[in-house]
Image (tube, rainbow, N blue to C red; front, side, top):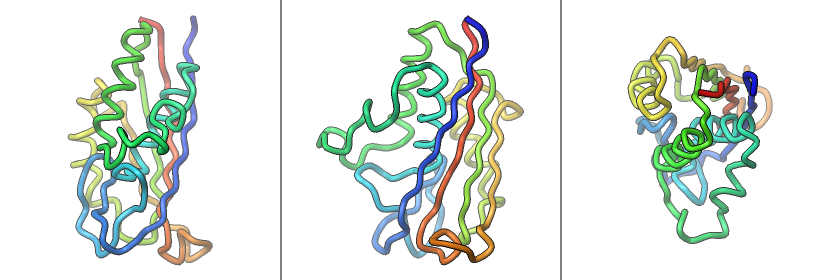
Length: 159
């Protein structure tokens, strides 16, 4: 098997009364992401990229929101499960690159801490994980501060 690439995407609404969790990190903010689990849109996008590259479905099939077992599940725990599946399938993660689209809060001050959480979970070094923050320049739901969206691409290789 040659190298395999997967693309992931996730979007969640920002709502009051929830913690904002991105990349496994709690970020101080007045609102958090709405969802069945912790709604960590960054980890969810990474999971979908990994599953896409491995040909193993998507996050909704593996962790359906109709299953109460995943209620309030931590994205980091879901990611551990996916990485273990990749390992069992003889696949290693080579590189992951991500984009977080959020009008607020600013992402850049938190990238280092996100990498400290995600790199050990993914089994890669910080040079093999890209995390970039972008605004939506005031356009659409993201630009109005109603939601945060994340994209991820992952490169896998047979061990």
